[in-house]
Length: 148
Ligand code: F42
Image (cartoon, rainbow, N blue to C red; front, side):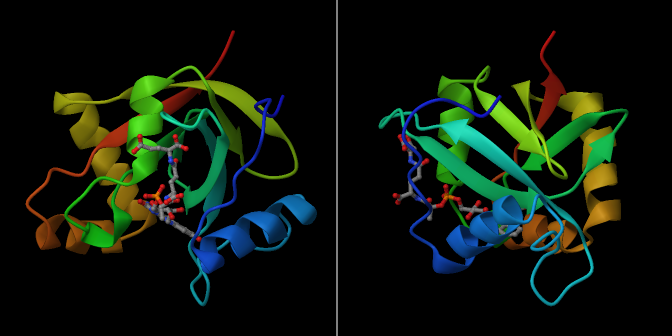
């Protein structure tokens, strides 16, 4: 089930457009990073302050049906805003990898579990390693698992 409430598209045109294309085609188009081969997945979160529905494509990092959300933001110094959305509403997230979104629960991983997922993330998208070198912050990783 998609999250209920008002959807507020990203102020970033390329992000907003990719979300629109992915949703309109059920993930048949807009399913890679532009001009790259690596796959993306669509995530919806609940705005920490606005309560609105926010949607972000992120790189596809999947293992045993769970999906990582890597808060890399290209190695920028601050966490992306959806990091705060997940901290505020960890049980309001949907994952869309193909035509149908499903409801999940997110949790930030740490320690050995994070190290395993970081390895998977870099295997899926090697640029993550460069992003981590670029920034002093430790890039957070959340795992989303299906509800019920
Ligand atoms: N970003 C990543 O961090 N990791 C990825 O793997 C990744 C892959 C990717 C692939 C394709 C693509 O098109 C984009 C990709 N991105 C990736 C970019 C990603 O989708 C986000 O654009 C990026 O992480 C930045 O997210 P952001 O939420 O910081 O974006 C800003 C520009 C934004 O949307 N700001 C909104 C605004 O109106 O200014 C606020 C959005 C929001 O959620 N607000 C909350 C609310 O309450 O509504 C408040 C949040 C708070 O701070 O409390």
